[in-house]
Image (cartoon, rainbow, N blue to C red; front, side, top):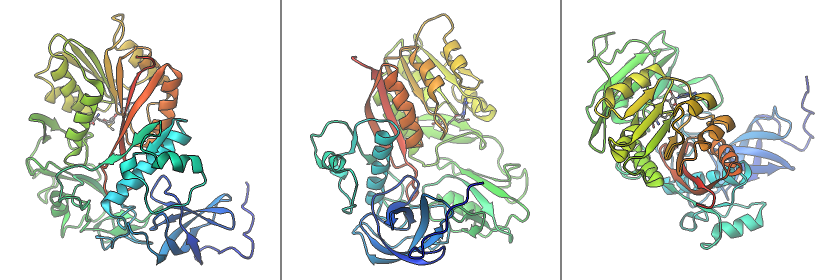
Length: 449
Ligand SMILES: C[S@@+](CC[C@H](N)C(=O)[O-])C[C@H]1O[C@@H](n2cnc3c(N)ncnc32)[C@H](O)[C@@H]1O
């Protein structure tokens, strides 16, 4: 087994303090600094800052991890974290509590751009209105110049805020949470890269309905507690270890049945165990972005891959009308049941309860030829080259790729560009304020169209 060489005497050992000048943002909520030529991923810091950092992990040969524990020169983007559990060694649920919400979005735009360029090989830059931030030193001068030039070629990426939750404070938005449980039975979240559970009964990003459902309660013996709230109806489901609902304090005592969600006047009945977007404004924001990207027409055949409870399929069906067709593919039984219930008034939608694979994508239209438009919204790992190739072989005139991991997205977009499609737009959305997560919607069109 390879063993890292011991560090030179001049370098800090684990737990020691080191002074760093913090550079660009990295994927996952850290910034990049250098110590004696070695990369250090620093949390709780911002680009351009001078910090004293504690080394938390030097088990890797090529990079270390550190926590900024003292800010010597602060970025203008720095704010006091609104959550008492945020900070070095504390809750690992959030990454950017110490940055203002607009600064968080600029950091995320930079992360998306870096992924598009590095993993996707695509020309991209942070949209001029969002750049620059904090004066971070970068290695790539041409990239910096492009980023600051309004007329520079390439995809201009920004991350848009979501409307309507407590202004733009980034708090109180999360309607679905999987809490860990402390030895004392309190709900909590794990410390960063650790199994240690930090009690967070007053989690500040939790929606008030979620926070209210766990306030003052203990769940002794549970590994986890899953809480899902419907803002519209006020209904909350609380399921220790994903089992029976104990929202009212007794197993089985709470209101039965799915959670009711409403998007643009349409009702969805979603099982607590099925996927649903966790920010109250996310579903409608993504629907709008997908419809804008695809411009579906009456009579179109549309494909919705990884369809969940049928969110996009429903609005595609309304757009294509009864002379059109929507094929939705989803493998999770709870999501399929939720979609079947919610789309019963749209009989030109067929929900296929199978896994998305190259074979099921090829087979879903039978011998009837291609599709006109398609949306795909895969899990974090992305769709992968085979599924993407099968989808593009159906020659849709537009594809909306909804992605929660910009690196997986960028890899798949590179495959699409190799298959005769062009990425002509990538929009970012701040669906997960305070965290390093960012949602993107990319549009693909046939090259030359
Ligand atoms: C990010 S969610 C998107 C759901 C939906 N588009 C929405 O916005 O509500 C991804 C969905 O893909 C489903 N899924 C994951 N892997 C799958 C696979 N291989 N085949 C089909 N569905 C899959 C999950 O169950 C989940 O419902």
